Amino acid sequence: MPVQESVIIDGSFGEGGGQIVRSSLALSLVTRRPVVINNIRAGRPKPGLRHQHLAAIKAAAEVCGGVVQGAAVGSRSICFDPGTTIGRHYDFDVGTAGSTTLVLQSVLPALVLAEDPSTLVLRGGTHNPWAPPFDFLAKTYLPLLNRMGPDVSATLEEYGFYPAGGGRFRVSVRPAAKLSGFDLLERGRPRFEQVRAIVSRLPRQIAEREIRTVRAELAWPQSAGVVEEVAGHGPGNVVMIEYATQASSEIFAGFGRLRVRAEDVAREAVRQLREYMAADVPVGPFLADQLLLLLGISAWQKGNRERQCGGSFRTLPLTRHATTHVEILRQFLNIDVEVTESAATGTCTVQVRPGVQL
Ligand code: AMP
Image (cartoon, rainbow, N blue to C red; front, side, top):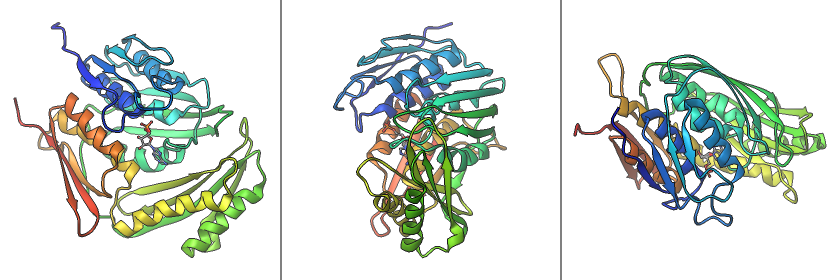
């Protein structure tokens, strides 16, 4: 076999965070191209790899029997040489309260394209700030991934909050040979709205105050609010607003933390929902970021008459995360990503298509 040239990624580029590492791993697995990532998280207060990035690197190496150099806490550079991704059972333990959904992001695109089905158990944090909460994975991300051909389901078994962790969820993956693209341009009519506030080993009234705040801010009826008391490994609190339309189901979260009032945590989630509703787009900022990877892979795989490859969506102005993501995609995949901003509506349309044949 010819030796493949490595893709060289500058980890300090753009947003310069952990997502550059995770998306590069995901794309290396899918394309089977080795990758070298330098200057990892160079601009962050604690630069280099943290524990949770290592968990993603180890998971990526395990699913494909890949070879990694430089995988250590604090390391600012890694080389990753992937093998073929194998579908089977995997058990990934982040080992701390680090986010399990972020670990899954690195390996799922390759597992949905593997030859055999997989089952996974992921252990660690399930509802972490700065990461997709489990509910976003299950209700927002997976239904759209499943529209592309695979059949992936996820079941939460235990909540894991920072700092105790100890959460757990299971995933089952029936792969597809290729990912079909789609267009998500209109939001359509609302289908469902609900706010859930969850407390683990904390007073129930925290969740009740969050629900009261969200309902008052949005003038939602009592029936739209749900309080859940769970017994996780440690204390934790999250409030999640679900807003489903004909196009998609979005989840906006506020994470409880010390010295922040429950009312303010709830208002953080309300603010995100309001921005999304005002823009009248089907895709929120986090989903936009994550759809780019899936549509990019779909466009790269090319289509035939039965399968659309790539696609488009309308969203809010792209975050720095998302624009960085576009650059990473361009470095791995021969695709064309076009972002058209509309100043009049404060929205943008993203089109992801196969690149011109070289
Ligand atoms: P990074 O900050 O580089 O570690 O990447 C964070 C990842 O988590 C990105 O893919 C974000 O889209 C995603 N993310 C962060 N917060 C949320 C949230 N509240 N809901 C959904 N996804 C999120």
